[in-house]
Structure formats: C-alpha cells, structure tokens
Image (cartoon, rainbow over all chains, first blue to last red; front, top):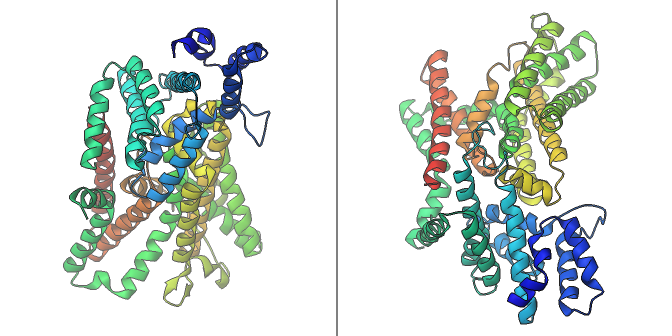
Length: 198
Length: 317
C-alpha cells in the first residue's frame, strides 16, 4: 500500500477528474503495471459509455444513490441485492486483484469518498424545511458520516456481503474518521440501530 | 416472523394503521354512514383532485423544494379552460389540452426561477401564486363561468360502473408517479438531488434540467387536478384553488415525504391523501363547521411536519 501511495501520491490526492487525467496520461507511457490498472479504473469511474463528451463520476453517483437504497432496503430486498451486485462490478470488487492493485483500489475509494465529502460542506447539503434552513457544519459532518456508513457497512450487512465489500468499507471508514470527529460513535450507534432493525 | 421484522413492518406501514384507525373512529361516530358505498364513492371524488396535485408536490418536496403555486394553477386552469369553452366557443378537448400546456408552462417558469435564477422555491412559487391568482381574476372579472357541454362532466362527474372516472384518473396518475419514482432513472435523480445536490451534479446529473422537469410536472399535475375540479363543480370560480396547496402539502408530508428532501415514497402519499380525504368527509358528516375543519387540518400539517423534524433531530443526536 505504501509503495502505491508514494508513487501515485499526486494522483490519489487530486479530486478533479481533469487534473487526474493529466497525471494518469503522463505516466501511462511509463513501464508500470499499475498505470494500466489505474487507467482502467479511470475509464470505469469517469466515462459515460453512451456519451463520451459528458463529464460524469460514476462512483460519486453510487455515493449519492446508495444511502437511499439502504433506507429502502426492507421495501424491495430483491432490488437492493441486484443493485449491490451491480455495485460490486462497478467498483471492481468482483475482480481478482494483485496486492498492489488492491492497495490502489483502496486509495481510489478514499479519493472518491473525499470528493463526496467535499460536497457535504456546501450550502445546499442537508438543508431543512423545504430547503429554507441551512444546517451547521457539525451537523453536516455527522450526516455525511452516517451516509458513508449506510452506503458501505450498512448495505453490506443488509445484503450479507461484508467480505466482498470490506475494502470499500475500510476506505470509507478511514475517510469518515478524518472528516468527522464523532465518526466512531456514529458508526457504533448506526450498527446498533441496524441490529435492532430500526 | 421475528420481533425485529414485525417492528419494522409496523413502522414502515404506520401511516396505513392511522388510516384504518381513522376509518373505524368515523364509522362508529357516524353510526355506520361513513362506510356506506355511496360515501366511499363520495370520498373518492373529493380526494381525486388533491390526490392528483399531490403527485407533482411529492416530486418537488423530494428535491427539498416546495410549490406554493399549486392552488393558483388549479384556479387559473379552471378559469382559462372555462373561458376557452364558454366565451371562445372552443372544443372541449382543445381547451383541456391548451389549459394543461399552460399549467405545465407555469410549472416550467417556476423551475426557471428556482434553477436558473436561484430564487428560493418558497419565494418563486409564492410570486407565481400571486401572479396567476391575479390573472385568473382579470380573465373572469371575478364572476363565475358556467354553461359547459354535458360531455365535460367526463372528468369529474361520470363513472364507470360504481367507480368515478376522476378516481380512475387519480389512480392512473399515482401509478405513473410511482413508476417514475421507483422504476425510472428520473426517480433516482429526484432522490439524489434531494440527498446531495452538489454531488449529484458532479456525478453527471444535469440538476437544473431535472429541476425544470420536476416543476413542470408539478404544474401539469396541478393543471389536471384543476380540470377534474372544474368538471366536478360545473362552474369556474376565481377563488376555487385558494389554500389548496396546504391540503396538498399536508397529504404529502403526512405520507412520509420528508420536508428536508430525499426521503419518501408514493404509497405513503396515497395514504396521506386518503387520511385527509376521510378526515374532511368525516368532519362534514359529523357537522363540524368549516372553520373548525381549517383548525384541524392546520394542526395535522403542524404535527406531520413536527414529527418529521423531531425524527431528524433524534437521528442526528
């Protein structure tokens, strides 16, 4: 993990897709196996197969969509399981990976989580009462942390895919810990609530 | 079935239990009149127009917005459709289509003010509420317009067997709304924008376009509700939609759609509509005055919003 982190430091720290494209493009010619893997992830994450000109972040879409799927888990369990399977494919978690690739994927998950969390401090995030009332930064951090738990650990528990999603869960937990000081207690609280079926 | 499953099942269907309790209470209080076939048909006619309007409002509230112009769109469509049929001698279908297009255009205008100019939804839709209420007065001169062809009764008075056509229109609209929310990509976009607008934008959703679409749909459904109401009443009045938006908001929030956006489902809204419809009908049967009805409905709205806010507060502690 440390090897990948050092060499690709700038790439994993950068959250802007265009800047990242330049970095991955610059190093694509180098004799580096990881560059090919990262280029593949880049395409999977940022390319819209139907419209190449459209700027998308398919993983960020997962971050937006999956908390809602967790909330509706009891209403449509079959749909939830199908979506979790699709997510495993989209997040490359069904692939057989080398240690180095796994480490790179972990850092890529953290990068996506960081980009998501970056949006959670904006004016519009978590507004209350028909969008009239802005919530405090502390509330925003706590809410974002809850969402990270729902889309990773919560969904894994609901679908019985803890092992398959472990890398994703671990990466999101690491980012949540840095983002929200109450992360541990929030994760524990949600874990208990999930067990009680609330 | 485990305790946890029963608990979660009860919790997710609590709104339906409230509805059943309400039906039992009114049936006992009215000495059985409430649950007669005639009264059930009556309730289905009464709820049809705000049931239809509540579908568009659901979409709007899901993206953490609000549409206060629904009542005045209903009034506007009432007056314009009646004016086109009676004063301009237009064919019923042409008048209905023009009215629905105008309602959709008003919704799109609301979408433009919210998405492109950035006016808060409350202010933007309050402005159009005032504008189109005024235009309705200007068109009608404050006088009722009546004298439609008997075939116009199709939308509000006719029935297929024992089932009123307006109730069938409402059911079809709820099915469409449910399909949009649960089966289409647009439905996912609505939840996503309500959950985290900025992340939704970065993930590739054209948020402004979706907002336009949502407000346009809200206008369309309000317009359709206006047509049903006009057909049912047989006369267009420039005060007919006054305050209706609050009934519609009550139905939607009571149905579990969060006032903070991103959470809610169409089946809950159906329950919300039935609860408010039964409450109104039950109070009429029990001879409760109109002013007391207003007080009760206001309290229901305050309690529904209060419960939603409290549950969010509870979750975040």
